[in-house]
Length: 127
Picture 1 (spheres, one colour):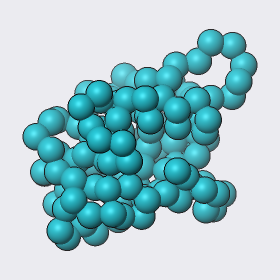
Picture 2 (picture 1 turned 45 degrees about the horizontal axis):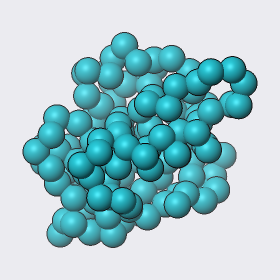
Picture 3 (picture 1 turned 135 degrees about the vertical axis):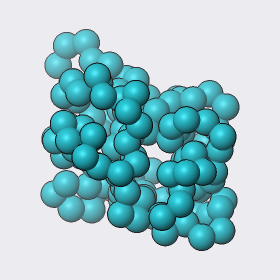
Picture 4 (picture 1 turned 180 degrees about the vertical axis):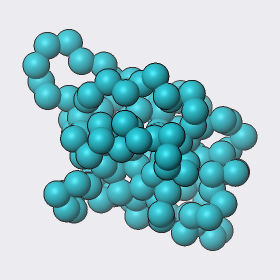
């Protein structure tokens, strides 16, 4: 789903579509699989529900898991979808996924970045 892109990001393609929720989401089992494969260190017990940090256009998004989302889809609230590169959703779009160290760094500054939901403020634990 995601391939090495740069020192800070993986590159993937997901269908991006609007939804009426309050935060960006993707299918829960897919979210957990990406967390396990790309964010966890393999040492001790680690969370699989930590938000993934994705970049769509110029926006960083805190992405959570949800059972009601189709496989391979990133669902974004309408207000966050505005200002992205997505013009005719649903649209197959290139998405950058921040690597674990980059994601932790971005989450530290999430209040200053557009696209982050304030409800994620307390989820600053390293991946």
